[in-house]
Amino acid sequence: MTTTPAQPTPQPPPQTLADIQPGVRRALNHCADITKSRAKNFYYGLRLTPEPRRSAVYAIYATMRACDDLADEHTDEELDARRQRINTFRQRIHDLFANPEDNPDDDPVFRAFRHVVRHYPVEQAHIDAMLDGQIADLTTNTYETFDDLYAYCYNVASVVGLTCIAIWGHDGDVQVKQLAEYRGIAFQLTNILRDLAEDATRGRIYLPAEDFKRFGCDPIDLQHGLTSPEFERMMTWQIERARNYYQMSAPLEAHLTPDTRSTSWAMMRIYRGILERIAAKPERVLTTRVRLGGLEKISIAARAHLWQALH
Image 1 (cartoon, rainbow, N blue to C red):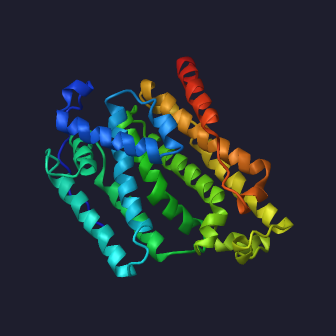
Image 2 (image 1 turned 45 degrees about the vertical axis):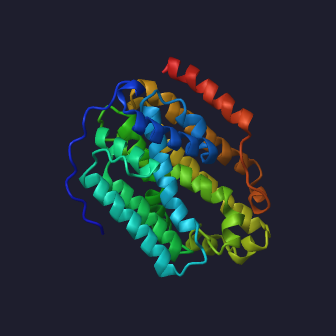
Image 3 (image 1 turned 60 degrees about the vertical axis):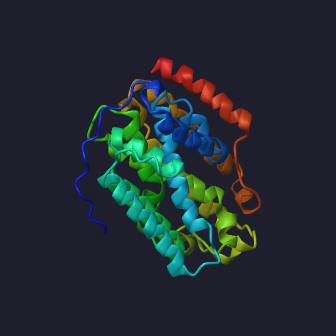
């Protein structure tokens, strides 16, 4: 377990983009470009965040994407070399948290992230957990129990939500972090179901082994796209479990700063929409990547403004 030192107290956040140094603004714009091109689902919700917090969450996404790429790219490298790349990234993050003052010599993503750490109560422990999740993707292809999978989902998804609410702002209720954690679990369980076939071809079976045993399914069938009544019953179970986490996290928006509630709601509706599309025909995940179209996501984002006005 990583020991996290005390962090410097954040400086007051900027009130407008004009309050941010031009060089930092350029770095933030670079992160916005990364988010727009690569966050196919998150972007439609994140863009509803008012500036300058919008640029801050784009910087969070770009930083986490940079780390994620360390695990997914360079697959021809030996495991130890790939692990070292992540640990080098981790040390850079630790150094940044220890001294978040602006450094014009940083690459744009790190310079933007340095700005975020300088002005918002982002926790180093959450970034460390995300890095632990990337290490897990290098070393773990299966999970025996749901408790094991939950820990992985926390590291790769819940910490994203916990970092976002630090930027969006919230009422400080004791429940809010737990709600953000559950929302991340719901999102990652949805991702796992959506990517079931693709992950299986890469030798990764994220659904717990105990569930395959419970329903009499063979994980090998996923690699061959084979469905069965047992598989469909297992999928129904998995879908219901994900729904439960959406339900448990439902009060989250009420605790967020009012002008960011539409952001969180839109992201939830997009991911919940993917889950319900899977539920309509679960066997499709064996042959295609279930998704919402661009117009559907634009429609959800538009409805989010109305939803926020009513809440």
